[in-house]
Length: 166
Image 1 (cartoon, helix red, strand yellow):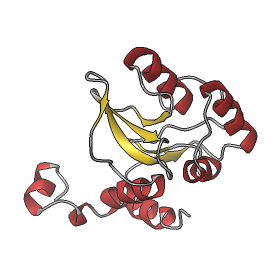
Image 2 (tube, rainbow, N blue to C red):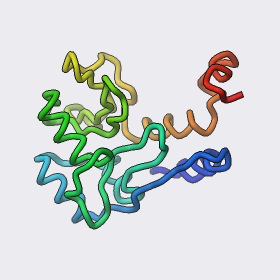
Image 3 (tube, helix red, strand yellow):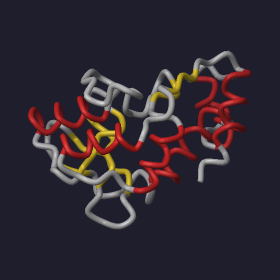
């Protein structure tokens, strides 16, 4: 399902960027988090958690589960990020925060459609942007890693220069 990850992370690492995965979460770890959040983690995200656990790129890590310590609640875990956003910003119960690194927007899995899609949740207006970031978690992960590995596929020369990538 995530056959592209080794290629993209290899290219990213060769550029000297850090990639840190938490490590595989067990089915038991996932069930503990599901019970605490009162939801079922979708299959694609479950497969990601069981392979990588969470983490990834330093600039936009994916919230995950700490293997063997699923109730660890600090920024970067789906437990903390989701509970925090629910309490503070009225995040809908069928959303899981997968990235809380931005000041105004959290990236979430919206599990109301099948398959779950990735959306932006504005914490100030407490609304979801109308256009999904990706139609599935796999598509989201692919695009995020490809953008880091091959930014020239997404940005023109001026944008790359402004970002210090050329």
